Image 1 (spheres, rainbow, N blue to C red):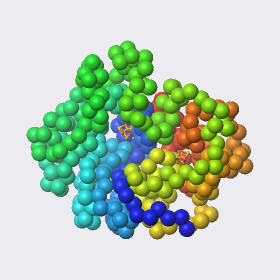
Image 2: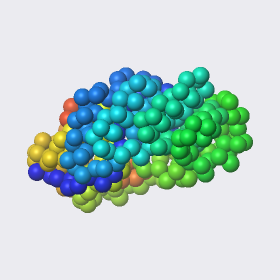
Image 3: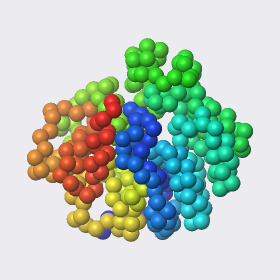
Image 4: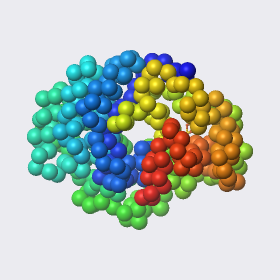
Length: 322
Ligand code: SF4
Ligand code: SF4
């Protein structure tokens, strides 16, 4: 059995669907990801397993958690009843212009929610006018809810744009400069996964395949530093998105031999992954932008072969919308 030991810090993704399809989204969320929201039964099981794994606090994210406000309120109640502290709820603020905004914030306050993490950056501005996160911040102040803008550092650049419109890539490049995408990615310090693999292709140089294939085990797969649990009660490692295993196994032990892709990476790194994939018919390119970029593309190929630890939707959605 592989074991993660005690969990350290994580979040619950209540859905995969989102009103946006940001080009840096690690989880490849979008308006066309499958609909659906975490159920009360799933929340109870997630809370039970998180408690068993030693977790005392989490954040809620998605997708866009506010796509189902009643579902969100239920998720908050379940955390509270399980004695798990809610650090914050993430949102892109798409709903902040609606008349119901103040009442929704009051309801969250009544459920003892302390803070929102409000997304604001040029990538989000392609889908959400940045006036909305700013409006939501003001609503939080009026209604006694804490918040933080993620990331505040982008506000000077955003102030050069029309706040009430969304902006195309061409429009953002015209105002922020041709390097809008790479500059935004660098200020974020993005990990390479999900839709962000496309960003890497724009500005990273490429190295020979051999530069990125090694036998260094990928211990990140069992890292519990900023993991997520999705609405299907599956554990997603912090950086290696597109891989997921049941949370019950992450907490209680992962059976040896059940997940060949996961094990190849865990024990033998990208070298072992590539060898395994070649056996499945994968033909590599001569160059790749990075080790994780290579890993993503090999896994995207293997996802089509039905391996249980690979979320096929993730790879398909990661390569759409860009
Ligand atoms: S980064 Fe957030 S707002 Fe953007 S697509 Fe992903 S979940 Fe949605
Ligand atoms: S090479 Fe793959 S498994 Fe290893 S850290 Fe990068 S994405 Fe994760």
